[in-house]
Amino acid sequence: MNADTSKPLLIGGEWLRSSAPPLVSVNPATGATNYEVHTATAEQVEQAVLSATQAAAQASWRGMQPPQRAAVLHRIGELMLRDAETFAELQRIENGKVHAECMVQVRSAAATFRYYASVCETLESALTPSRGNYLSMAVYEPYGVVVAITPWNSPMTMEAQKVAPALAAGNAVILKPSELTPSPALLLGRIALEAGLPPGLLNVLPGTGAAVGSALVAHAGVKMVSFTGGTASGRRIAVVAAQKLMPVALELGGKSPHIVFADADLDAAADAVAGGIFEGSGQSCVAGSRLFVQRSVYEAFIEKLLAKARGLKVGLPDRPESKMGPIASFAHRQHIAGMVDAARAAGAEVLTGGGAPEDEALSAGAFYLPTVVAGISNRSDIAQNEIFGPVVCAMVFDDEDDLIAQANDSVFGLASGIWTRDFPRAWRVARALEAGTVWINTYKQLSIATPFGGFKDSGLGREKGTGGMRLYQQAKGIYFGLGG
Ligand code: NAD
Image (cartoon, rainbow, N blue to C red; front, top):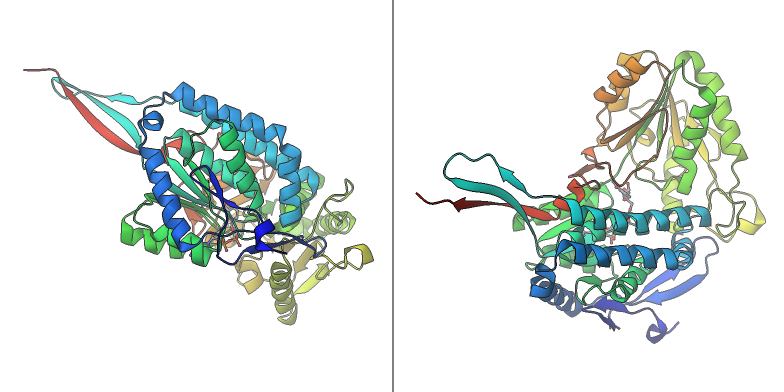
């Protein structure tokens, strides 16, 4: 494949080619090459920051009234829905998610643009209580150039979650999508221009984290970074940000406990536990990857879960009957298999899965079966480290104190789930869990209106909700003297 036929990048409203090595996009369901994508050179990083700086400073953008800015965001949401099938297909061929999930995610991304259009129009500044003969108030200013860096598991929703509020807040954005999933971001850039977003306010720079991502983070012209990805990458970005005294929002990894008490509706819980870990092939930051079941129902519950895992249709992601597609890349499947094999060698029992499916039609893809691992303690490597695959670690607990001690014994604190009919207990446990999100008798229910983020090594800052727009602004106090 020739680099001249590959997808260009977007800077200042122009589609540009580059002399840097391209990304080669591979379909993980088939192993076939999709296309190549241009990656930004060091000069293009400079060019993008300059273009974004100029666009952010333009009086026409800074002075644009909220209803006009909201109209552009609404239009982006509408155009995303118009092109939903294309967005879904691009995500599917790049990360292997089944078509139905891709469609849910593109609709969710469009809804995020509509939500932040509304927030932009309705969020109020405040008059603060006066302490003298003056008016005092808090107003909110954009940072200027915001860099958004995203992972490959759910690119469309993560990108909307950053780009929509950052634009609503009055910034210019440079979006650096994952190496594995550059295309939905490029299509978003195209749609934003069509929607009337002035050139330079959304630039899209595919490339590696090591080359393009780190150059953007370190650039003096970049004033804020919003990052979603692994904890190790987030920590590296935080170190650079500390040197620059630059604010960062970090959405990082997880190892979320999914808890089943003996009094729970076990069938509903088994459905949710299976969905919570196997949906998206477990490549979800909030995947319920540590299962804690109360001892008296452990055996019965595991039987139900095994039936779900074995009954799940693993298949090509463009087939409507498929419920679980491949792992997003061959390298990541190797990482997952390596962790399961190491646990097995250390004495863990693999109750189901633990390898690739035997189906000949799937042999060219990076498939891995839904996997349940048992006979381990919460302190074992497989229960402590993020796998980011369709692998659940099943463990027992005796009582509430034992459960809370085990559930919180993790460096991560992103999400959690509780199944019980005892509502006072649900409340007590929800408050005691060290996690940014707690689901009670449901799982993976997400609302753009509710704050989202991690405790401990799972992150810093909160996205979503009205605070998700304030994340991209700095408060300014203004005192208006009234004379005398
Ligand atoms: P990753 O950290 O390898 O990469 C994420 C993004 O950061 C990519 O675009 C990459 O190019 C870029 N990057 C990497 N190192 C960088 C650096 N030093 N400077 C600048 N940019 C850099 O993560 P991944 O493998 O793409 O995604 C999987 C991880 O993301 C998992 O740990 C998962 O839990 C996490 N995740 C978290 C959330 C959340 O909301 N908390 C959501 C989705 C995924």
